[in-house]
Amino acid sequence: MHTIDPTCSLSQQFRFRLQDLTFPGMINGLTEIPERSEFSLNGGEYRPFYVESVHDDGVDWLNGYKKTPGELRCRHFGEFCIEISRHDPHLQKGANCLKLAVKAGGDTVLQTIDFDWNPRPLPQDMDLSDLRSFSDIQQVGQVVNGAFDLDRGANLIRSRAPVAPDALLVIGSPGKSQQATYRVRFLEPRHSKWLGLSDFHVGMVEGVPPRGIKVGWSSAGMAVAMPSGGARSFIAWGDHSGSPEEWAIATNPPAKVDISRGVAYRVRHQIQLTGRFNRVRFRIWPEASPEPGEWTCDENTHRLPEELPYHECASFGLFQHMGMPVEWSDIRLSTLDDDVFEKTDPKKARQPFFRRDRPGAF
Image 1 (cartoon, rainbow, N blue to C red):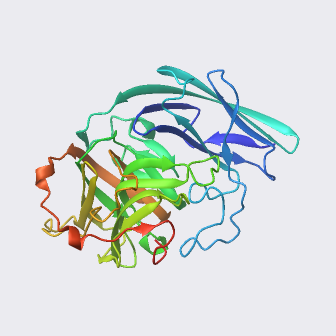
Image 2 (cartoon, helix red, strand yellow; image 1 turned 90 degrees about the vertical axis):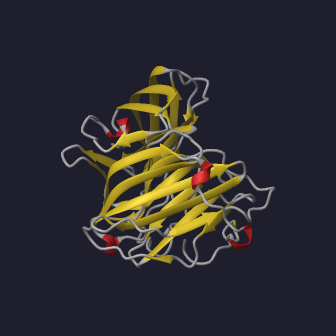
Image 3 (spheres, rainbow, N blue to C red; image 1 turned 120 degrees about the horizontal axis):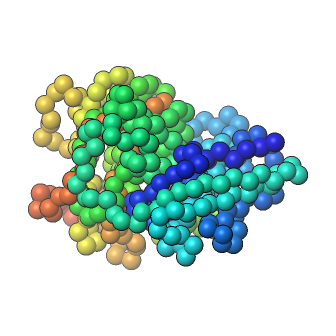
């Protein structure tokens, strides 16, 4: 007999952080592809949800990806994610009831998730230096991929092992130009592909063709460190979607940065969103050292063709791709005036990559 086990318990809560409310989880005990996997919201019609149907049989995740309709959203056979638009006609403010039904091997298993929906955006300026007042990770953020734990005793957030392929916890509500600062520590960097760090997340978009789960990652500015001694910033629309409009801008070759196991680092991560212009920059340095004046990575969209989609707002989140747990703490979010950003030379902007035509295993 299989069981339906959501990642974030049977009683959940959501604030307006993204366009979709996400309910990841695992169907444990599954031995074959389900004949039926559907959900009903507040007594509405049953609709299908995505269940990973491809086994992870020795995939080399450090150097490649599994060939699956779900792209990087789900790694394990039986892993699932339900996405409900915040504009869904069955979604209501306050209490909601989500019913799940999975039929496989002749058995149908039911599960109910009760959740509270508060559509009011969070403040743009947030001080999360003290996490001890929160009792659950969903009071801090919305899990989109992977899993995160709130360690109240240590006053930090920790990604849950194993992290693969992506883990994302969105903390802020959508905003324009903004900044995040935080403390981060890497427990086992040698076993990682990317060591996080964070993302100003725009949302996920449909794949082409649609897969039953949104697979295209859109970012107004990602900050990434690697155990190999490199760092990158990304700006992207629909990355991995297969859409003709898919594009990405990435630091290439990577900037140099030294990361050591167990050392505490500080990060300052900023984005600028003004009209069609999008810029990301970040720096990372050992906590015991003064903050440097130079940015580790700094990218913008000056060379993005006018006909392609662009970002209007983004929500800050903690991000990790592959590896063992990472710890984040002392998180502070704030709005920025656009005049804190010095002018950039459009001629020196990086050329975007289109669809999958990009060098390296980004």
